[in-house]
Length: 92
Image (tube, rainbow, N blue to C red; front, side, top):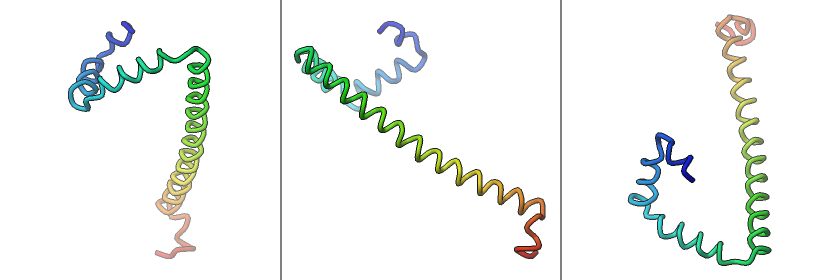
C-alpha cells in the first residue's frame, strides 16, 4: 500500500495505531487469521462485511437527512423571526 505512505497524515495514523492504541498485534493476528481461511469463507466474510457497511451507510444517511431537515426548518424559522414576518403571530 505504498500510495498510503505518501499521505501527509500517514505517520500520525501509524503512530496512533502502533504506539498509542496498541492495535498492531491485533491487526496482524486478524490478517493472519483471515488469510488462513479458505477462499469460499473469505468471500462469504467479505459479502457479510459489505452488507453490514451498506446497511450502516443507509442508516447513517437516514439519520443525517432527518437532522438536515430539522436544521433547515429551524434556520427557516429563524430567518422568518429575524425578518419580522412572525411578529404578528409571536408578538414583540
